[in-house]
Amino acid sequence: MTFPADTIVAVLGGTGPQGRGLARRWATAGIPVVLGSRDASRAAEAAAELAAATGGTVSGATNAEAAEQADVVVVAVPWDGHKELLESLASTLAGKVVVDCVNPLGFDKQGAYALPVEEGSAAQQAQAVLPEATVVGAFHNVSAVLLDDPDVATVDTDVFVLGDVREATDLVAALADAIPGVRGIFGGRLRNAHQVEALTANLISVNRRYKAHAGVRVTDV
Image 1 (tube, one colour):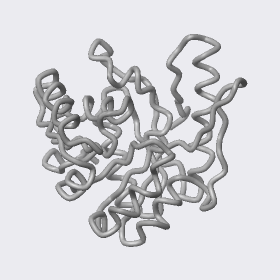
Image 2 (cartoon, rainbow, N blue to C red):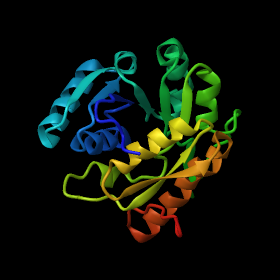
Image 3 (cartoon, one colour):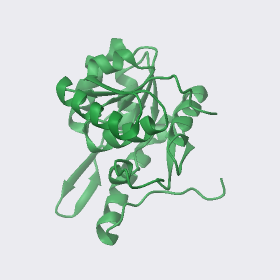
Image 4 (cartoon, rainbow, N blue to C red):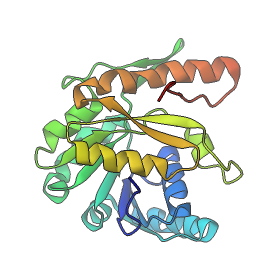
């Protein structure tokens, strides 16, 4: 499946490292992107920079305005504000595909570690808060540094795509495939999102030890 080029993608938290990096890659691929932020002027400034760098269609808005404009909404906000933001946008996101790539992680002197989530995972929390949206978990384990580096032509990693609706997971897998070097791989139902989110803590440990930007490849697929 090829991601429909006229489908608008909003990135909530689009001025952060991960959101900005994803937006850069999709804009380069010709997918129209709206950057969402708590600060509309900051979003507009970042959007203008990305549009100039990629030649793509990128605009900036508040998170609420971005969610309203888009067909597919990617949630790339810090874990601390995840639930509160989604609760505030529940009516706006009804009927839309919501891609949650938030990793509930803590950090201490020993490094990164997975945090417990009452609903099981950030993606499951999103679905609980957004009962009228279709939530898909994806893009948890992709290096923000590589995504936002214009000198990196391809990001060589697979993306686990998790969800309960086949049409939605196929659409998000195609969104992953739009990034050169990336493959979207179905990783199971939304109930399996916890271990994918938690894997990011392991990758952070790998990156610190080996001074790398590690990703994940699935063999024999």
